[in-house]
Each structure stands twice: as C-alpha cells, then as structure tokens.
Length: 503
Ligand code: ATP
Image (tube, rainbow, N blue to C red; front, side):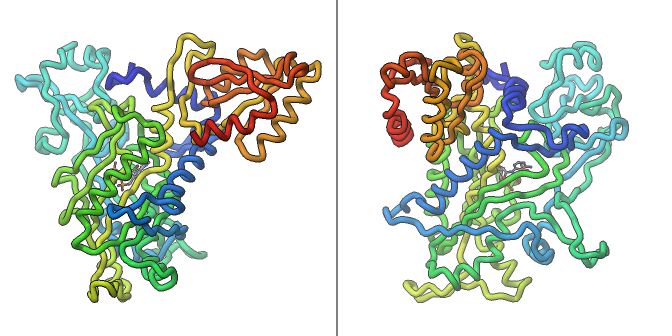
C-alpha cells in the first residue's frame, strides 16, 4: 500500500519501469546522477505520445472557446539558451530562489518549505524533521524518540519554527539534534558559458521554464502570423532547474520537459479565460483516462502566489494523487493568470513595444496572459501511476492500463509456435500493420510469457497466429484488460484496430 491509501507503492512502479524499459537512472553505469533520468525505448514513446496528444489538443485542434468559435493557437520551438538579460527581466535571476537548509553532518540539502517537523506537544524531548510526505518510520521513532507515538507530536512546517530553536531539531537523515543550518536562498538556474572564455561576461542560463521563450517571440508572432487577440502560443521542451532536493522518482527532476501555452487576451476578459482554461485542462487530463478520483483543482493560497500572480485571478493547480503524496495530492499542472507582468517587463528591459492595437475595440493595450503550464515528464509519471493495475489472476500479476492512444505498443503479433507456416503469416501481418500502428512481432518464448511481457508494457491488443490460421485465415485477438479472446479474420485485423482506436 502507498502512503495515501493508493493500492500500489512507488517502488513497485519503479521496478516495472526499469524491467520493461520505460525509465532508467541517467548514467547508471557510473552510479547515476541525482535528479536526472533517461527514458528507455517504451518510456520515450510514451512521452512522445503524451506530447503529441497535448500538441493536437492545443495547436492542431484546440477546444472551442466559450462562444463556440475555434481558438487560435500557434506553436513555437525556441532556444534553450537565450540572452541572459531576458532572465533578469523575467525575474528569474533576482528571484528564482528556494530557501534551502543544509545538514552539517550528512551534507544533505533540503528545501526549507518542504521540511516538516514533529514538535512534542508537551515541549519535552527533541523535535523531529522529515520531508513532507515522508514521515519517520516506526524503526526510526524507536531509535530517536524511544518509540513515542506520533500522537505525542504536532506537525508544523520548519519555516514556522524560530531559528533559536533549530538546535533542538533532529534532521531527516541523522540521529543527532542541531545539525540543520538556517535557511538560505539558492538560485535554481543552471549557469553555463557562451563562447570560448568562461568569464562572468559570458554567463548564460539553461532555461528554467519554456514560457519565457514564448514572451520573447510574442512580437514576432504578432507581426508575422496574422493572429488577433485573443490567441495562444504553445511550446513543448526541456527545462532545467537545479532543484535542491530532487525526489520522488521523476516527479521533481533537475532536467525535465514542460508543455506550456500562453493565452494572450484583453485584461477585462482574463477572468472568463482563466475559468475556461481551468476546465479545459481538467477535461484533457480526464480524456487520457486519468480518473476523476485521482485529480483535483486546488487554488493557491495568497502566500504561495508567484510574483506575477499576486494580482488578478491567481493560480490554480491541477493535482494528482501520487502514491507518495502523504497528504493526498501533488502538482501536475499550474494554471496562472500572469497579468501583463512578463510583457511589461520585457517591454521595459528590451525597449521593445509590446502593446497590441485592437481594431475591434479601437484600443491599445498590453494583453493579459493565462498560462496552463504542465510538466510533460510529470505527466508521464501520472500515466505510469494511473496505469499500474495489480491483477493476481494473470502470470504478470500486473498490467499497465494505458489509454490505447497513448500505449507505446498498440498491438503485438505472435506466432503460437515458430514453425508450420505460422511465422510467415505473423511476419506478413506485422509488415502490414507497422505502416500505421506501433507494433511488435515476438516469436520467442511460450505464449504465456509473451502475453505477460505485453501486459507490463501496456499493449492493449495481442494477435496470435496458430494452427487454425493456416487453415481458415483467422487469428485470436486478446484484450489486455478483460483477458477475453476471440477470433477475427486475418484480413480484418487492421480495421479492428482502427475501429477500436477511433471508438
Ligand atoms: P514547485 O513549486 O513544485 O517547484 P512550480 O510551481 O514552480 O513547481 P511551475 O513553474 O508552475 O512549477 O512549472 C509548471 C510545471 O512544470 C509543474 O506543474 C510541473 O508539472 C513541472 N515541473 C516544474 N518543476 C519540475 C521539476 N523539477 N521536475 C519535473 N517537473 C517539473
């Protein structure tokens, strides 16, 4: 069981992802690198499929707006490294900081806003710190608190504890009190150097979000694409943050991918569009088969709001019930009303006019922005968690219940045995289907083992060619979820798949 009552644990999901080629630790043969992950053959396809679905839903076929008219959203692919002045204007050089706390003994580093502390209600004995969602185990409580029950403590955020009481706190990975430093600000941007010399003049940054590349090109798009406010610019790509505590598998990584869309609108209409995008985004996640029980929308509290979201309609998060979210849910996507903060900043710093002349209103203004910003790699984590389905009645004991349009392999083709004309028919079928569908031909091992592999890969349909196929040109199709098997005509396999995928 996971911490929040979800029936599976993160360790089980991680193990499957490793053994089936979804995700590997980056540079594993060198011992890995904290916060970096590689996507294996199946993971890369799953990620691409999610990305493509987002792109289709945002750029190629966006939802109709509140008045039923199709929305206008264009795509973009901007550089990862931009002029460093852009990050000064956006506020990232000055303000993209997390408060961090070091442990002097273990040299571990934690984000202060993610550390919780158990404070004894009677004021006696040490205070016990732990990472949010990772409460101390009974074994640890036995060791450091002589088995005092959790009821004896009250959980509070580290940031609410005065500094002069830090000496009484036992850090998350030590048994001794007083090892935590006071919180210090830590800039999350990765620095690099452009050109042959590595002086301060050549410093540049790896982008910490894809959004700014969009604001930098707002003027270009406006001048070249015949768009009219309201319109959107969407982009998918890598982002880098030197996270203080990368953790929870790929949830918080140092290199990750984002899918962001900036929706430019008239300031008076920002409230309507904020509501619109909140609902549209939830609907999209649900369309991928994520259950409503595991998704929720949460408004940001006033003290959580980013510098740009303090005014206007705020920020709301789409949250998912990850197996590791001790208190229930964790962020998947943020939908923010950024006001005209970014465009105004760039107008000032780059000395470039960001005003829009609205011919219908006969008015000049800097548009407001509603931003649905989600993590692509975090979305992959949600798909993996959601798909993992234990089932004691099958050899694999588990199957991945991916939505068929996202599954890395759509169909597998097996000859029952590798002789008697079966391999040839299987190969022909494979050569035909692979032109259109992600297919795998697998001729090795007994059929049960082949089904088990495909269950763990999340392949919705397996087609088996057996002795009867040679006689009557029919095949068995096995359904991943129901395990039902039925016979269909060999020449109907392609239309069977088309119908299932469209249906
Ligand atoms: P946090 O407060 O948790 O650090 P954030 O609110 O700053 O995250 P945003 O800047 O709103 O995150 O980024 C938009 C989306 O990008 C997030 O909803 C998340 O899906 C994804 N994301 C952000 N940081 C990371 C990360 N370190 N690893 C993976 N995905 C991330």
